[in-house]
Amino acid sequence: MAWIHHLTWASSLHSHPLMRLSRLVFLLFLVAQAADGIFTYVAVTALGPGVERNFVLAIWMALVGPAPTLVVAKGVAVAAGVLVYRHGLHAVLAGLTAMYAVMAVGPWIHIFATWP
Image 1: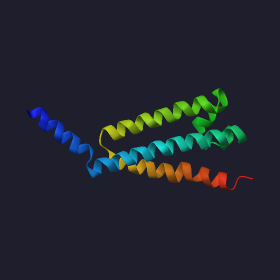
Image 2: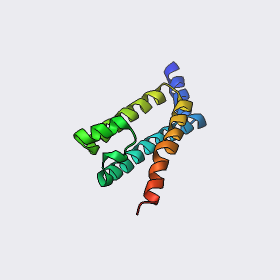
Image 3: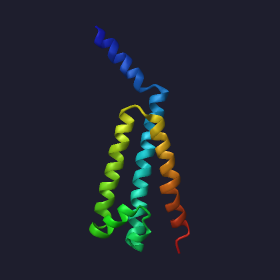
């Protein structure tokens, strides 16, 4: 009968407000990664790899193209985010998400808003 108590405790844990908040942070992290990937792809396709400020990514984009480079880069970023989330480092993930919003997605939004 101990397993029934465990199942009840586990189901109540999943509806706990902190668990919902951590899932929201993880979802926002994934959205930030997707937005950065899409914005980067559009800009690099239109203007060339020189608009990418990450030197390593710009080189790979010139060598193999923006799509494969961004799929690998975003895949690595998401995998790292999953590890951070699964290890319960939700404050770290929130910080990374905020940094991504300000330092990656924000500049692309500004560029596209002023794009002729």
